[in-house]
Length: 207
Image (cartoon, rainbow, N blue to C red):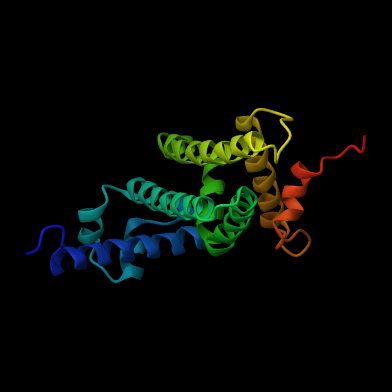
């Protein structure tokens, strides 16, 4: 077998593991994490219960693996969006647009994560939040570097340090997305990224 090439057996194991995770997400989103058992997941996925325990120690382990997988997908997609274009304005537009697209495309996982993160599952989230914060921090560092580049090139005024600007943009986009999650018909996430970016670009006070 060629180096780096996985066997058919390994591919099948990975397919089964992913099917278990997809089924778990569907059930967690429908019923809530605490109302789903490993036996229900096995039954819906049409696997023996022993197959689930070959991949995951317990339901908590499965949940954490699922959330970390989604975090990795988000991280990779946003990195690609920011690092793609040369123009710094387009980097920021891509960030705002891609973040919205990811929330829309992964709504069940988003709702699940935040319901558990802000609910009664403190122990469940222990360690997991640290991993997700680490990835979020890495994205904020890249956004900060974009703002720093814009300041150096005199395209942005230095109204705050780049790190603070990155936190502000992350916070504004997240606030818009939370509002959309609560009332999608009343508060759709802006299709035009400049609706959000202009809050920073143009400011509030006309001096």
